[in-house]
Image 1 (cartoon, rainbow, N blue to C red):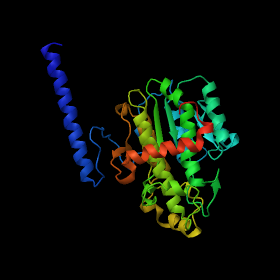
Image 2 (cartoon, rainbow, N blue to C red):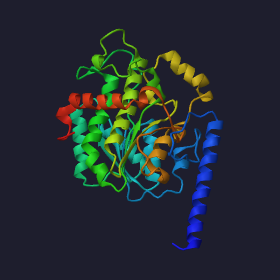
Image 3 (cartoon, rainbow, N blue to C red):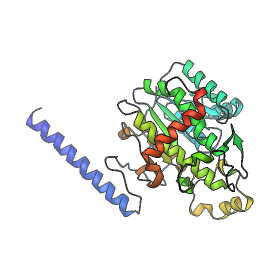
Image 4 (tube, rainbow, N blue to C red):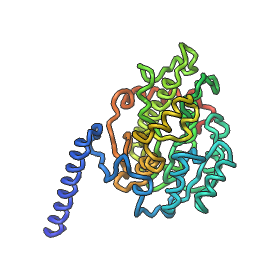
Length: 342
């Protein structure tokens, strides 16, 4: 490299560094949470939409799988990724619901049935994807349930935990080879700020049935969302040394079908004053689309994002020992449905 080129490179690095510093100061000035060191900030924020964060990207040739595309954030994510040229495998609880959503998104969408509370269904869906023989550039674990009014169990385990965590745990395991086969496979796990509702100890490994004590819907949901974040954290650790990455996201507070189990007064309150603090669905889908596609995030793994930027969640969400234990317990609970050596 000659002197002129060396000076040019040094100048570019200096400008980029200065820009990052300015962005971080502006981020802090807005009262945003701390940013993990070494993770780039983007030019987007809480009001950015999924279309805006992917503007100018050509995802032609990329293959993505998005769970829960029949409505809400999943449907918007499906729409925007196909709009940018990606081929999207869209899952819903029935093939009919998936087919309706994919038909609305156009020819670049393929419907798949996936019932996260039925591990046989999860395995069948993953096997169908594997038979396509395509690398999986993006896997977005988006589907979930919230605020079930009464204790429900699947396989003897509380239903939030099964649907939001264990179903996706099985799916990711069975598709990990396809993610690793991609040039830069990305796993995006949709968590939630609701992780703060988890029990004080984080994950109640001795009460995954949910039968001890009085059932609390927020606590059960919070535990499952903490599990999402911890799963992503441990997956990132296990992916070190590969080109694949894993990150978790908080999409924000959005009025979608996720709140269908809310009490009538909560639904009414959301209709009256939700506009003061809730995001739109296009804005809610932005962070997962951003983390899944934004080029400067190549190689960024093991982090938590909100409002289209990295954040330090704190507490149990950063507990690596808890994440490793959750992984081991999840393997034991789902071993019959996992590939060998999981």
